[in-house]
Image 1 (cartoon, one colour):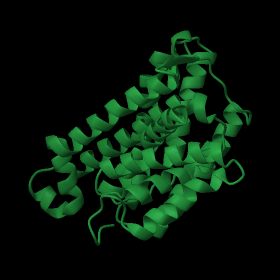
Image 2: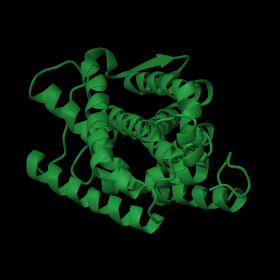
Image 3: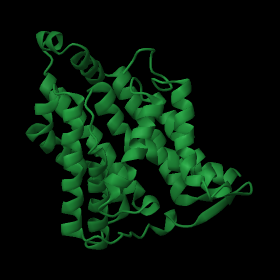
Image 4: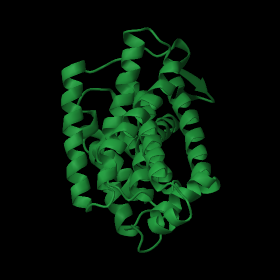
Length: 286
């Protein structure tokens, strides 16, 4: 049971890193970016190419995946996304869905439709026993990295001047401009950072989740569930929602494999009935 709990926590942490960029763009920028999974896929393919074609260490691939996805996000934000910040949510959904299908087609054309595999470093492979609990070394690595990211992201948004400028730009764009805040630059940096986090999550998840051109479509619903259950007003909500959903998904597939795939959806329904605006959203929040 403790082993399943540990694996569920690791899976939940990975979901958080994959989805927290969507939390930022949806909750702080009020933009529905359903193409978020495409940036995660970008990070995954950057890792695959660097490791399998050029023999670069996995540890160097992680920052490269972040930078690569962030760069793609920055270019698309300047070229396309910024023109839709004031558009209706339906327009944003249709636009980002279109990007998803374009990303799927591009990945299939350039990388092929087969499942991509990577070889983890020896020190991250296998399991070890701690007090009788089987702990996967790579899952422990994911928990440590993701916990550090969660703490750092919360501090950036709540304690730094950039976080204050971002919240001001979202709450009242005109006033923020009057105060000398470069709203366009703040949004561009925020979007790029969220895309980079998705790319990092895609790199970390390549070994656990698998990677193929349909990755953005397969995991889109998981990202939306994390954001819906956790709420978009804080980072803490999606973090706790990711842990709950990760543990429920792993435990459900182990204990009741016949219906294990539906456990996460049942939990989502229960949570949204009890907390329609998310775990930590204020009543009446988005």
